Length: 182
Image (cartoon, rainbow, N blue to C red; front, side):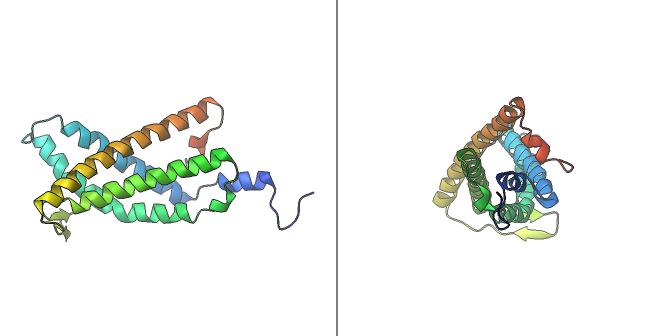
């Protein structure tokens, strides 16, 4: 017998599987920015430091990722307030922990990226972000930490994509829930 104040497990599962339109939009914006920054960032490391494409990417990526920060903060806020009390089973708790690890890695990459800037960065010719740290030793450490966090983030994204494929193969379309009409 279901009580009025106690939702059924089907209702809980249904609520846990619902993503708002802003969360869906922010998910795909995050995916685009993170995948671009990861592939282009690691990719240009293979090019000579003076190669024009490498210089363009190294100029563009701090701008696009800096502009992404408020959208990521919004996404993080929506994820944190999205009914964590509905996670009952081990799989839901594991998925939640994996997402929190992704959010932590993204936060670390964004923070170290801002802190390690070696010169002011102008965003869309309107706003200039100043160089915050001027110590070469600190900048070197931040640069190294940033690259480690980028590698961790790339690994977590690969695990995330593998989980999506695994769920899809098992007949549980988690990808469908992240589509606007899913």
